[in-house]
Length: 250
Ligand code: FPP
Image (tube, rainbow, N blue to C red; front, side, top):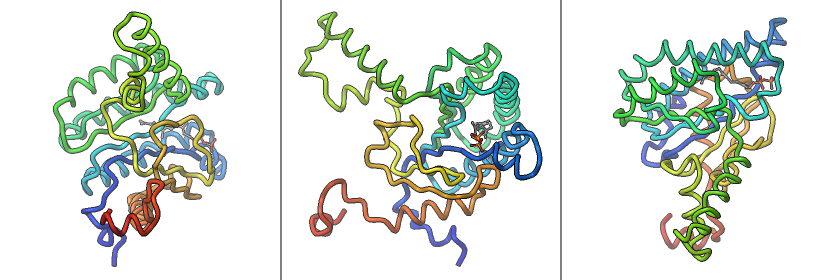
């Protein structure tokens, strides 16, 4: 049976987060420049977006550019930004055709003006789409997101809008860039690295983590299905025992 047919559509993760890693190594293996890997990574972005929407995944977050990535050689950063702008421009029509809403998380004010403009237009143009939300993490750092949430809440206490006792998991979640999205239940990282690398540290508290040796430019729909099947075959206990889970029927 095909992998896709084995997926239980009643037990899908609502939100899948992906660390797209290994573009550079994929290119190097082929004797090409790193940027060649990023360019080929765009096809994988298309494939997972399409596969996710077809299955009925409601949210997908892709780690496209971390705060640390600004320290890469200037030409690589420029190439990534150019690729981002051209990809978004090319894909807006497809996003709309498939009713996919585009969103971003991260310090996007750090991006070049052209990229900010392209993103703002795409976000505006897709804002009423409701099949799936595609969230690009751009100039994103989870630690800095948590620091700014702490500052926002501290300021509210200082201004007398809330009391210290009002600071809880919910108010912290509501102060993060991801406040409008549910937490991911599944996080996939490609390329064999088994780290979280400053990605959604708070939001991944209970997520299942799936690591695959496949480099991002080789990642195809079947790899996504494999990760979802792996997720469905795990028992999510949220700190409870197996017996408790059996009783509650969760
Ligand atoms: C990680 O591989 C990948 C990135 C830092 C960028 C990902 C970007 C894309 C796939 C293209 C543009 C994306 C969108 C959403 C249009 P790496 O360079 O860290 O690889 P390495 O670990 O092998 O060096």
